[in-house]
Image (cartoon, rainbow, N blue to C red; front, side, top):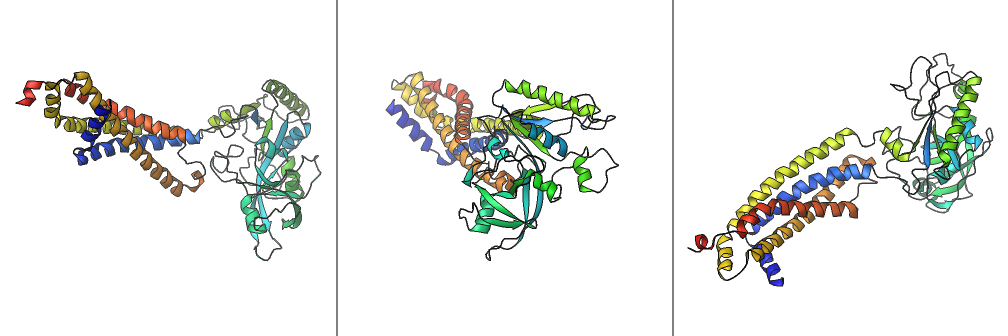
Length: 433
């Protein structure tokens, strides 16, 4: 076996230019497939695998009785202020949190930090536990009762580095939004991809820089970021009028303790909607939606049809590469027929010739896989440079490396199968004359 492997290595090194061309031909097809498959694989990865089936996105149909919010008959993707406040306050799940994007001026007192416009997420304290947000310092605040605003904040690591030079800032104060907030926590690096809890600005947008209690948004009349949808055109300019309206702007998520609790929460939602109907709201037929994280990502088409079309094209390109590789391998093996015939004459069996050629194809496949892996790495880095929002998840993990190597080896063996079969049946007399 060692002798056969040694002969295969020597044959691979013969005609180095031809061997290199075979390796590059295979690697180009592999790289195209790995890059497109890698994008699909990484974009569709479960962002919270330990409990994604128990974390649920809530949708309620409070829309115009004469027209669906989303055709053909889907409820709005977000909820109103009053529904967000009511459902969170009811505490019918293990965790519940509404959230919305807003912004405002941050004016640090430190001389080393200049004022800046901060992008913020107004939310409830259970947001962080629900989504397993990692804390570098401190802890989240507790969910407050409605109409009780606590002036506290959680900072991203970048903001903490910018304002407090990376020190433990828990207990220190930060001036923003015209008020003074106490820092209760600092997040560690946290870039969930996709950003499943709010994809209004794109599935791979960056998380917000600062987090404040949900009620602060109403108390300070903060801007409505993200996506705001209203069907009642009689809405006045008064801020409280917006909060009391049927306008949707707030993401609402809950986490249940067990899968069996989902039906209980569904019953609660139905009861809540019936209660609101008696108050003159929800004039459409009850149409609640509870989607877990995987279902929500599918609903939002995070991996759209174009990506699968690109992968199909990459497979076609790989097929073309395999035909070219098969031609090149045939050329390479043809140059060794005299040597193979001589080995046959000296007693080497067809099985030994076949095995040697198979090992040679295997070597070419491994080298093609390694080269394809390097090209894939360069390609993914290029995509990350062109689309910075993708940079947090575009990595080649062991699964993708294994996919690249396995595909390369199979491709090389497939390309070489017919040339190997012809070579192992080389007539002795024909090639020894």
